[in-house]
Image (cartoon, rainbow, N blue to C red; front, side, top):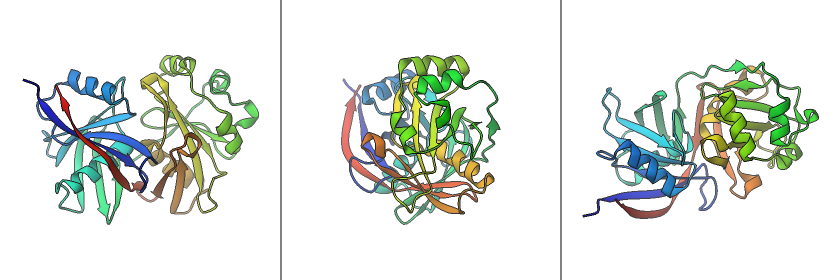
Length: 279
């Protein structure tokens, strides 16, 4: 007899259906094997699928995230999606929950309809290796790299690349060659950051490519923005609270609320699909 697994699909970092970043959430993943979690993520074919189980280390829950190709240590949008799913299911009774994750302890707070990621401290390191092959593969000319910041690596080994403007982001690309290069360099994802934005009230606009873990382009990347908050704060290029944009250039506009003091990354979410998986 097939096992029935309830699953929801939620668009995160948006308040409108078909915007932001979609994630699948399984609120009761107890008893599902690692191999089946990976298969479910591959079947859902979203950038991440989240699985919630009881914690074994004193947290409120254990939370795991799988891309179609691999388990990851931190995912922001699927955590916001999980919080939204928990709230709709009556499982988010407090104003804050703490998750045990592969990347450490992760807090998620709720203020009204905004869910706030509260990751462990972000420590960025300057990327000192040659950039020629990376820029060429991304379709970014050397002149497209801005001088307002230095390329940096996040704790998840996402490479932050400051760019001169939106045209550079529009012309960039994600390919299999980029995925192979990322694997060889031990880089999880490539984040292109522009201070030119779609909306005048925003501070940054980003694109994020991670073909090496099965994500051709991520519409809105919460984990990367937790590090971007520190990056912009340390460069004194952003106020304490600012709005970050991502996803517009692929037709899924998303908005993130950034609090650089934590850092904290906030966003809204909306449920677009409910169903059952039959295993």
